[in-house]
Every structure is written in structure tokens, then in C-alpha cells.
Length: 219
Length: 219
DNA sequence: AATTATTTTTAGGTTTGCCTAACATTATTC
DNA sequence: GAATAATGTTAGGCAAACCTAAAAATAATT
Ligand SMILES: [Mn+2]
Ligand SMILES: [Mn+2]
Ligand SMILES: [Mn+2]
Ligand SMILES: [Mn+2]
Image (cartoon, rainbow over all chains, first blue to last red):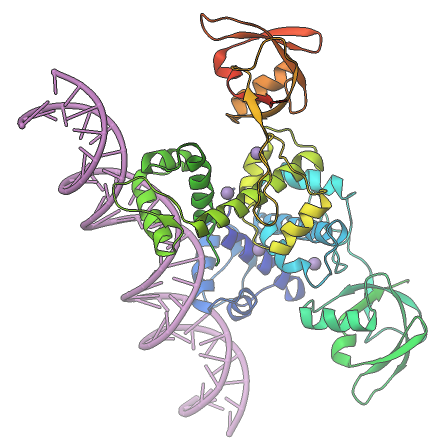
């Protein structure tokens, strides 16, 4: 089945949002897609017609099995292109998303298979998110947020929650990137802020930042 | 100035068609774009509005200076992606066009600059067509068709005119590709067919095929 | 020069994807 | 549980990019 760029963006975004709560609301989706709620309702009817979403008026909705498969495939394309941009063309992690947002709609399946091989079948994109394999399987990392990580337990950064340019540039500033070893040395209950050791330096991170940084959870 | 995918396809196709005769006709352009003449007229009005074409009703049209610059840039993107697909992902020359037809519309300029560098600033695409540089300059090859090449003068294949899958697969069959050394050993005036030496073998090529094969014209 | 054929444009219509404004439904608060 | 707030849908409209059918302009033939 062929989908328009718009349909693909909707499917992918419903998929990403429903990861959290299992379902998605109209307003929520509208905000993510920078569209108006009325437009979302329009598209939901079309996607329901195509059997891609379970949707009844005024109720929260989610993807069908078919919808899920399609969405995962689009996520795969997005993250493979992000990896390409970062690894082969030298883009920074805050620059890759917008470009991949366009590249993900190029429709050739052979292209994606070959790109995957060319890149060495990478498992994670530049933000630490898993890249689904060609069958749609996703190998999730066990990870824990810095805001709940035990004190004095050095771990490698493995992902970021919020991936806005704003937070990524802040992380660049502190030298925080995927694979960097960090250790929480103090935590302040007053505001949830914490002290983080990175190499030889220690920095104070707000709770808002800390909760968006994830590290590998070594059992 | 930002252009839609459709506008970009029109600009590029007008550019390619006007290479021959300096101007383009409505029917001609419609045929190339697989659209109806009425649709072409619609788009021409829009492109004239944006000062991209010189167009008056019922007359042949062509690109303005601005239109030409834009078109060359799209051709650059197309051919760079074709080179990437062929050189890095191992696609055959008859497979790259359709995929590049989509990739060429990804809008990031930085992407193209970096792709160009990553590829080693290639001069020619997999079909032997020149890749415009970032300033829009095009280094054309001096080349001559097999149908007019002198007898017993070995030369390297440097390009193909018609680039349909049909002819490219025929050329694959004979082992004719960019860079391959060939020599016209006989020419038959009756139908313009000729005998071509490729390595140790000799093949008979029809005039229709021969006129679409170009070799470097060594003064 | 008049007729015929070809090319091109115009008029009017469709689909997709979006919007605003008004209305309906569901959730929250007093 | 009534009033208010929020969330979501419907109605009606718009722009882009197509289309078909009819009309106009240009080119080719007799
Ligand atoms: Mn996208
Ligand atoms: Mn990512
Ligand atoms: Mn294209
Ligand atoms: Mn080419």
C-alpha cells in the first residue's frame, strides 16, 4: 500500500506518541505535527478508511497491526538516514532530524536495504534510539534516566528523551553525547538537580535536563 | 525561494528539453512529465508569476536566468544522488534514475554540499552526464556519437543519449558501459548499422542504438 | 485562400490536505 | 449536579495539482 508524505508523517507520529500511553489524543497529535485539531480529525477518518488506525469519534485512538507495521518501517527509514547523515556526512546530532524528516519519504525499499548494509546494519541512531531491522524487530536498550540513577555508579550515556535542538545544544556544551561515561555524584532533593561527573569535570544539571538523559542500565 | 516537488520537476524538465532547441512546447513537456497539456499550461502560468519562465500564450517558452539557475541546481542534486546510488550502494545504471527522481527534492543545501564532498566531488553521473558544481558551472565533455565516429579509431564510451531502461539493459548485454573502450570496425550505409569491437568481440549495432552511444572525442 | 489538422488554452470539476468558526461532547470544578 | 473548561468534531472554504471537454489559435494541406 502506498502512502502520501502526509499520511506517513501521521502514522509515524501516532506510533511515537502511543509508545508512552498506548493511545493518542487529537490535540496531542496536532501539536506534534504542527497542525490544527480539525486537520487531525480529517486525517484520522482517512487512515481509518485504510484500516491503519482504531478510531471512534471523541475517543483516544491508536494504530492497527497494519498501521504499526507501516509506522515502524517509516521509523526505520528515518533513523537509518539519521545515522547516514551523522556517520558518513559528519552532521551533528541536532541537525540530522529535520533532513531525515524529508529523506524518510523516499519510497524505494531496495534503497533502504542497501543503505542499511552500506552503513553496517547499525542498531542505534545518533540519539541512541533503536533502528528497527528489516523485519520490523526492535532491540530496545535497558536504560535508566539520570534522575533516578544510583549515586556514584558510572555509566555510559545511551539516549536522550527530549531531542529538541535546545537541549541537544546544551548537552553539546557539557560534552554529553552517546557513549560518554558519566556519574551522578550528588543529588539535591530541593529541586531534583544533580551534580554530574564527566571526565574530570563536575557540572550541575537541572532536573528538567537530567530526566532526559538516559544511561545503560548494567543490571 | 522555495519550490514544490511539482515545480521542481517542471523546472528541471524544461531545462533538459530546452538544451536541444532553446525553447520547449507544451505538448512536449506534457509528454515528458506524463501529464496532460492542460496541466502544463496551468503550471506555466504559476512559473511565469514567479519569474521562472518566459511564457506567452500559444508560444514556445523557456527558462529565465533565475529559472535556469534553479533548474541547474536540481539537476546537480539529481546527478549527485545517482552517483551515490551507483558508487556507494551498488545500484546499476538503469536503476538509479527513478530513486534520484525522489531524492533530488530533499531541500537541504548543506546536505548536497556534504554529499558532494563525501563522494569526492564527482564530475559525471553514472550515465556520463556532467554534474554541475556548487556554483552551477557545468564542464561538458567533447564527445561524438558512434554513428559518426571515424572507423578504426578506438575510444572510451563517455555517455548515452536515450537513457530508458530498455536501451540501458541492451547495453549491459553487450558489455557497453561508461569507460569501456570500443572501436567501430565497419559501417553499413544501407541502414546505418555498424560493427563494434568491444575487447575481443565484435557486435552488430543498429543505427538506433549507435546514435545514442557517445565516446570521448580525442581531438 | 479555404479547409483540415494539430497544438494550446480555457472553463469547470476533482482530490488532497490544510484552515477557521461554530457546535458537540467529555472532563473538571464549585 | 450545574456551571465552566477542555477537548474534539462538523461545516464550509481555500490552494495546489491534477483532470476532461470544449473552444481558440496556429500550422499544414489541398
Ligand atoms: Mn517526514
Ligand atoms: Mn533520532
Ligand atoms: Mn523528481
Ligand atoms: Mn543520469
